[in-house]
Image 1: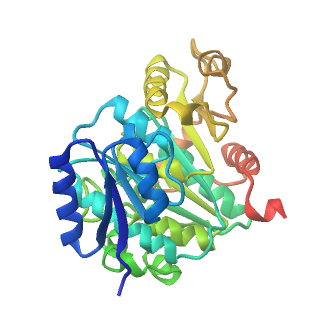
Image 2: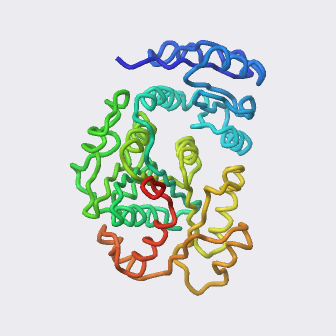
Length: 357
């Protein structure tokens, strides 16, 4: 039987507090052990009650939550609320009541993560703010580069809307397993479950494919899957959706390194700027790095990345017609080719556990 998460609520509106309290207590997965209506009360409740999870409005949790997992909850989604959630270090952002089931899944996953082994892997999140910039291309080829180095690599497709990783890896048959297969066992997830659900790519990459291509699935197994994979693998690559929803923000908060993929065009630069304005503190963190994809002759150059975003890209990947041909076949480019070597160099810049010994 799974443990019940002990929760402290920190919400300003009393009526919302009562709704959330009753919802969590009736779920059988959580018990509300305390409430707070301001940051002072929240700090005191966390100190005295030592909860597993704090569910709070971003504005009340800016000071940080010591020793508990923070989930941000708001009655509406806004840039200000999202920025506050990122600044507070929230594991997820949820809109009440529309996303109450997703919030409950994240509360339950905290207990699953507590039971996982100590984290070992380096977690790399790959994100692109504009569709077509190359997030899937970078995530899949980076995972292949890690595997070519001899690292145990798990690639998790955390984009539930498109499932592009499956197409990129050629995993398009009906009998391929996905993250959805982990939902029934998410509360007692093991490495064996992860291995059984993973698509084994010839490169050596284990890929946990999107649970429901084309739409959301019931439940969110990504937190538990990441906790287990990170306890065993050398590196976990997270493929994120371009929308900065609660799942993407949670993943960014777990990453040791964030790779923001952009192309050398005005639309991509604008989309990246908008995303960084939401991410706020993360955008200024040393964990964030830029990868330029499909670089070629254009009015914008790689040097403009430094001018606009105040840091040089860690990799500049040249445009190559072989990319389109490989993608049409559901194949990855060879690791010994020009782009394959570029990904090898990018992987070498990211520290793995064995590199630190």
